[in-house]
Image (cartoon, rainbow, N blue to C red; front, side, top):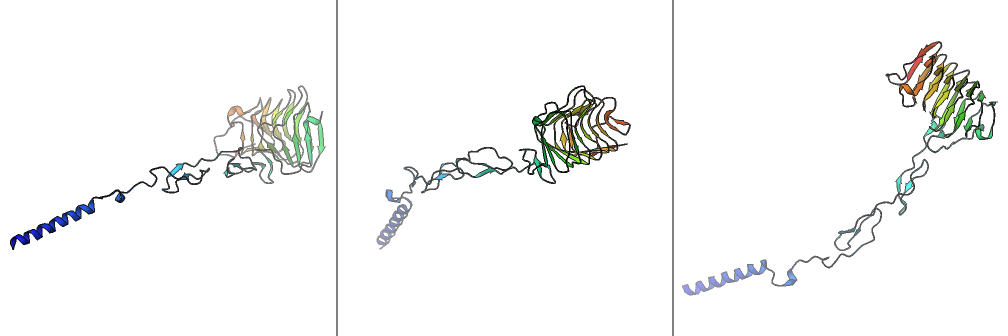
Length: 298
């Protein structure tokens, strides 16, 4: 009896051992886990500028996204796009207007965005230019010896970038003269206004407030750079301003919220009348150390 019970118990232990061994150890290759792409990936759609090519079976990246191929640089009105897919890389930059009130004369691309009442092309004129105009005036081109441009009654004068106005030597002249409250808008830093070695001035406001806006290059004259018979206001940026007697001249005041050259002492120079001359008083303290606007008045 004891022998029988022992045999039964031993057989049960052998069965259980065989059962657990069989569960934990695969007995055939059909039970093994294999890599579905062991023999190679199955490519999906080709890679694009923004999308990678992946395996359709396992999802692994086969070819990374290619990235955009930039086309022509963005301009004021045109975006930079990818030459492959056409997607916008850099949006159109927008205009940088010299006249931010009326959106006229872009400092970047030169677009006018208006029709001037009168256009002065310096390449087409000789000698003095003297006229009355109540509308807008555009000045452009390279002068071939004009003594002056004198405009009566005008309120807005625009100078195209690249304009060069040069006066003759040994002659009393004003390169640009306006006889009313006027704003002169420069269209870029390649504008040059140079008086000759005589009693010349670069820009002159004969009657009322003269405002210099936008962007210009250097302005100079034999005796002075810029003069106003009332108030002179510089809201834009210019290159260096210089004159044999004075840099800036005004009867009442000079206000600068823009910049002259790099705003150092050498950016504005004058002779015995100083950097700035106002109603018999000379000032040689440009640039001021206070926050702009900088104001000088007698």
